[in-house]
Image (cartoon, rainbow, N blue to C red; front, side):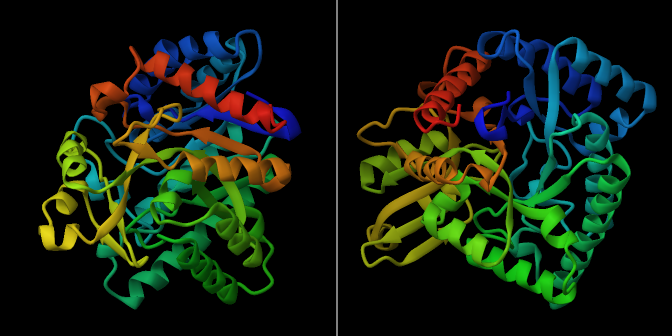
Length: 388
């Protein structure tokens, strides 16, 4: 939906299952329209579309794409952003570190992302920018050589060149957002700034870098890193990095006492990665690749931890308990920054994809109820700040 100051808000459809285009389209008809009817009936409704590689290839069939465009017009919906992070299966199987594969060292990632931009150029309405979010280059453990790092920069640049060509031919402004995430090659805002500096050194004076490449700022991810919104945004501004999209999301935040560590076992599950960053009383940070790894660490180590932040996306409207809190304060800080500078970024996407694996006490009655509650909370917060 379109908000004040030219902002656009959607929820990301990666909360639903769907690897083929037929499955993806079914979820749009079954769930997305039901959400629309409760939050934006009678008004143009924005869709944050997740397309895996199989669905993207199938949608690229000219008649299939034309049929989808007709459906969007008929239902008064529009697509302004695509989630191009998960290439393959994203539900009902072990995803974990495989969500980053193929990474930006590979031609497969380039070809897939280029295809998404071809589709987006056909879908996004004139006068609205289009964005695609993608993996933070790779998972840190995958990268073992300088040659791989150079290959990632080269492949990202090849994609930037493609985006520039598609933007030119379509007359639409399109950009890619790399999404920093815990334990990934681009993990912190500092690492992200360094990557962009290196890209700029290799392509001096080329305006296409600023126009077509930026960051998808996921508020859960950088909150897990104990970063502060003002510092993050200042760093991006200082290094001339555009914010391509804002992911509104919240992480778990706990004081890691013995009772809480026992309760956290209910958040351990076999599908998604739940990286943990633990801060000790002296401010030192310890990183764990998954929640079960953190919980299984020796008590002598755990007892030194003051606070844990856990990469488990929880509902935006979740009210903190005595045991479980959230990083919603980071999200609210980003909202404050957006209110002060509405042209910071025009794309907002709520992304709480963990519906299927959440402990029951965090869930609403249905996924539609959950999404409507997230809209209600988000729109309320944006209205307070004059953004909706």
